[in-house]
Length: 472
Image 1 (cartoon, helix red, strand yellow):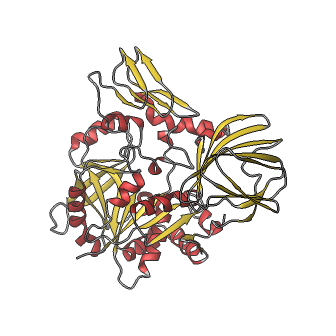
Image 2: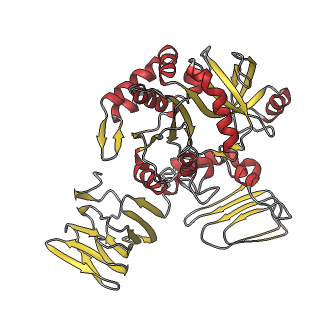
Image 3: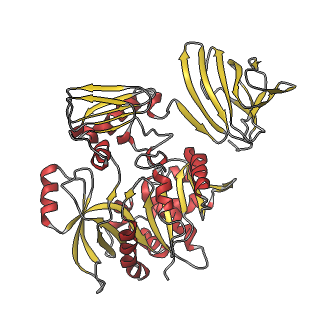
């Protein structure tokens, strides 16, 4: 049986699903369409399935501990967990993965699988992979074209040519087509030979590296250098930051697939979506009699075809149609359902304004747990901090702020200067400016504290770490 290594790409930021998706906690790490996150659903699709080996994960350095935690929750030990210092699109990530896998004694095929896709029919997906595998073993670069359900302007398209190699269901590629305008999308669907470009690929590491050397040799050289000069860090492999940052940002399609003579496509109907917009979630959702999809604490009256999501507060809507309303703890999005592809440009404007809501939620995850901002004002910030059992914050101090800690639940082991304290529920301590300190949970239960910060500057970069078990 052909062995296949799933290469899970998890570097995107999911800007079109803002404000739920943020750069430090993007859509693939969220439970958008099920109880598991999209990343976990992707990994789980291949876990303990015959023919598939342990996944090789390529992810953003900022997400490493969240990714590791979500893999651990599934019981999955990855082939490798590779950290990108910056995003450089899919060609570079696939090059790094191919270089790693080509060094294995028993070389497998590699399946490029973005971590933010939904596939409802896994059996049909496995069937499509079985069709693709013989051609991939022969050196073909096989992509999977999704049979279009409607004229979609948010996807690129693939036009097939003639059947290939006598393998039923496999075709050569006539051309790749960029995301079209509405009229062109209608024409492409009517043509009957065009498919949505899923961004999933199956090929051998050797074939990919050979094609890359012909069509994008600069990407291959940069990826090789980043891997060669990278280093191991705990359970991760860090690509060399300078070398990787110098690589041209380009997709697999642009770098190779649009130029190679060895491209092939397997048309498939597998219940696929990249959940690239709020409308995509509305389309998948359970609708009421008026076509509304709601999530959370929502009340509607005389309203039709809306998607309304509330994470925390009550959202009430009266007499509105075809809207998207998404409420989070610190931001609310309101847009027409026909404009949801433009949320990305809205986020770009927020980036230019240096708004923290682009990157952070009020709850920020760390390898030891999380903190959540409850209140912020000039000179004062209040946080809820949860420390996982057996975890500890770094030994650190601050130049510009003091901290008050009050234990809400659990038991805190505290270093404060030369003192070592054990604080129980309702007990507290004060950490003056410049005093070294550490918060640790040595119990089997979660520790929660309220932290009140006071000082002239309260930014997260005012941390001087003296010791850190997570090597940050």
